[in-house]
Image (cartoon, rainbow, N blue to C red; front, side, top):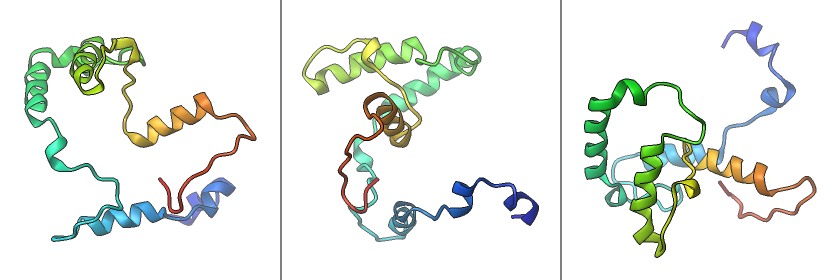
Length: 129
């Protein structure tokens, strides 16, 4: 990266270091590697058949789906997820209970903002995600 940009970085950016988790993730992608450290879900838990259904929905309603929408998510997707998760949770779920995030990191960030106050004690494993 050009030095001209590095001089303008914040102090936090200048002092940041790579995450050990990121390094673990690069290792588990090696052929034959079986690791329980990276937090990667088992491939068989992905509902691939439902992804195919989603592709058809995208084909039929893609122009609408790809537009900006409300920040709480696409209502038909939230309705589907509420129905899909209900038997897995052992209770009914409503679309209002569904929070769609870009991944676990965003979910943890939102949880932190919503539930943790300055000065609260947080206990984690080391290393921790």
